[in-house]
Length: 369
Ligand code: MG
Image 1 (cartoon, protein in one colour):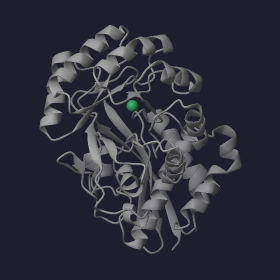
Image 2 (tube, protein in one colour; image 1 turned 30 degrees about the vertical axis):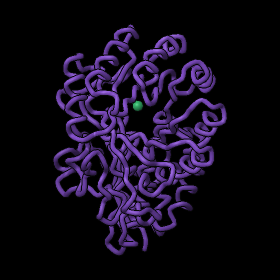
Image 3 (cartoon, helix red, strand yellow; image 1 turned 180 degrees about the vertical axis):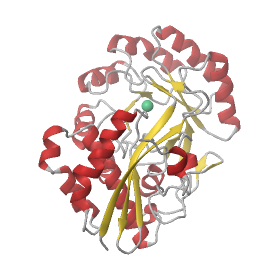
Image 4 (cartoon, protein in one colour; image 1 turned 90 degrees about the vertical axis):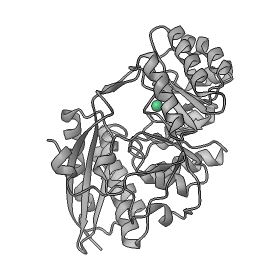
């Protein structure tokens, strides 16, 4: 079983409605620069990363996939995925210019495609290849009704709709210039959904430590399950101080590129809910390393869905530190088996592979560049 071709692609897929915004990002499309790896025996493995659909940047990722790392895989057996992951991560010219960022996202796409091939070669969905059981229940919480760009009445109506659709958890964005406005919106949402629905809050790294501290009492008053990315992504010491100052647990990880960053946050006691993302880390291989690290510290893993859930559904089913995950539907139209939620829980995928196989028309409809 040999890899005979490496074919990069770039997808730009519209997000919900007229676009969305959190405290830091404004989006009309979600980007998925990725790759198809074909084998001599006729299998196709699909992998991708997640971006804000900025074509010049996505082209750099695609070039890195096709020209920097792809040649390292030609002629190789994709089932040796951990060895190939190591080879890509230790490729000296790329390591020199980026142990995170564009080079890392390119490795993510290729690593995911390798796992997709390994699972397809075994004739199993990835969760099964990784040792998971279809009987494990993964709760879905909905992120797509909680955008900061929504006026309060639409925010509240959307949260009610999410609960009516069976979600037992929802996440709302905060991070306004005036934190008291966020506190009012938070109170309105809690009133609307009642006391029994899990409510998460996400500032996307916008605030400074004093602002995040002042927001703490509102989080406690409204029984917020976690405070996500309260301050700047890389600030280990700031998060540690915040964790000491407020009672609400802290969640983060979507902006961390490597295992070592997670080690620093966990060692400092600066994170409680660990949120690795396989398409921000260098793929499923490094995601698994972070999940094992979290498990060793008895911390829950709640993946960030930069993949729009397809890949992390498999890893969540397989890994004991996971029992819930966010839901955002943006990439549904491109996959042969989009993730499904029934009664607030994910349905275990049935198709062999990592959940990444593209529909035949996906490139024609959403391909760019
Ligand atoms: Mg987030």
